Image 1: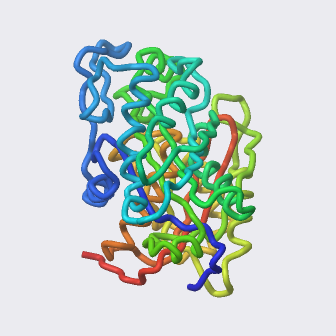
Image 2: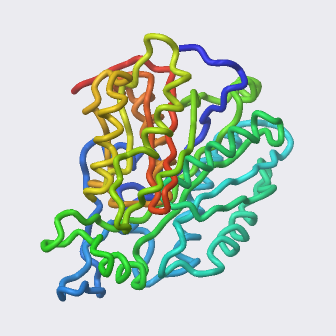
Length: 357
């Protein structure tokens, strides 16, 4: 499938997760079904048992607050910007668009400010962080950041954007809040989720820019949309997937004739609410999929990683294509925030290889 030279494309990826300290090892672990869950060394839940979490092993458990987020973000940014080190040009100016969790217990008031200040110090002879834009949008934050970046590229406001998401459910106040809301996966609550943490970034530019600097195009953005679900989780209303259906339907409107979705990446985390809205969306739009049941929900490996989810899904698409085990070129990614944002995107990769082994 050929896209225009103005299409936004991914040229660099970087990640820090419980199953890998870089993007490629994270994707390999997810493909192998490796779990990053472990007992917290000293925190216990309301049943008197250690919290079972997916923590990043390179960060000490006692590090919390802004510092924990900074340690998640920093190596991921450096990895994602690696391709620019291969270019013998003047120093590039980078705009960063970073998604954070929705406001909740355990999130410091100064989180975005402190992390943005740290990111701006990430400067080398190859690049300088010009601006850091942040938003507290939860699970949908990463794909919403991609949408904002694609608009900046289209208007020529920047040449390169760094799109990211970071989240950590490891703070004690956050864990208490999850359990108080009956969302923690424990023996007495099979429909809860496993807390995780991660940071992920993608270097984005136009296809024209990538070709100019001879950068590899890992994937191209075909369409992206965000909608609002009115019947949110933790309310007395019943969600029938209208918000998710709206976002996904919008991106499907630009699919070329005869093209269908080969696989889906989504933030299903074990909660019935998310499973229900996914099922309603598929019931309405199943004709757009080669196989509606062919989806990847990596929360069973790295836990629920909130705002980092969408960008990590972008990584999985890119690595699957590069390593030759993707089911096809066209992938749907979607994410669902507790406050109602539903973001969906279609990515297209260049590889047509398929490996079932």
